[in-house]
View 1 (cartoon, one colour):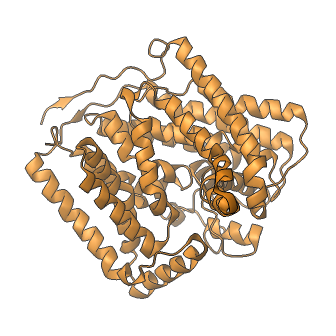
View 2: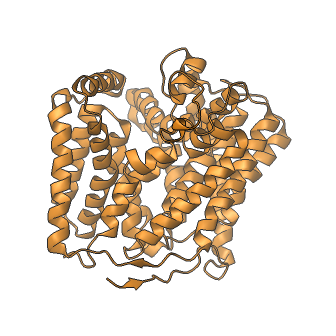
View 3: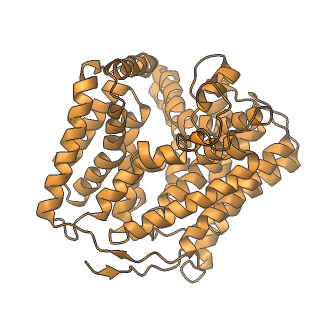
Length: 450
């Protein structure tokens, strides 16, 4: 096997991005920020106030500073789809971070001092600058590990079948297509089944299917214009939702189809389409006024699935981790299984459930992304830039490993990982959610897949 290097333009150079496009992106992010602020008061607060969203009286100067923090990274963020992990970066920036200053300033559980909310927003803004450095470093030279088609696909489907059979054997009897009101009961039963059968690998199996195998199959199906392939992917996701009642499995196909459109056009319209899609998702409930008596029902569930699940609760959890760890011991990364062999873990149960009891008095699992669970929980505010350095390294390693795969194709395959990247610890995203598995699948992906 011969080593080679894919020559990629620097994702952060001025030459690659004319000033007019950059200004257009900055303006687009500003508009998106304002649309989210409007949707917070119009939809999120009325329907989801019980989580701890509030309408705090904040002085105008704090709003101005928060807006600068939110829009600032648009000045350096990559705006062409040249490397696959740019999708992860932009999800971290646009989906997670841009709404965060608004939520921090209006958090009611806990209430943060406005100055603290602004300080945290600027730390996160600067940390996005750290993460963007991954795109200024040339990719590593690696050997060519691509397999012949006749070898790759049999191995792929053997692994896929083994994982699917593991899940079906343990959780197949729990299949139940329930409404969103009943998902917690299905999840509890699934957890009890796995614990009784002592089969923890089943959780890995269903996550690897959802996060790695199915998105790759979907990207292939779209590339080959295979309706049957897309239907198979949709069917497996429906099965995974029926046995585990995870919202990610329910939303997977719409998300992946959305990414096909967003990454279209050779990447030149990538960020503009992403910003437009996010603004459309936030504004979509306005159309429910045409549904007559079903307006409130549709609005409630859209806000629950989209505004709260994607743009609200993960951002509110940032405030909750900040408030909790201002008063309680940090973990020094002892929440990671390897590290706790050397550093004593200061809590009886896991961090997300500990915070769930603290803020809601029940075993709500407040899972959070790398900035929070790997950053704030581990080392306070300083943990945010520290873990951002690690994330930048992971971006560079992944892009180096899969550099022979078309960036658009690899980015679509990363679709579900991008969702989990914004609301799960980094180690969980790498191992449990399937980022490492996807990397292996793409490293060996055939040069020409007929």
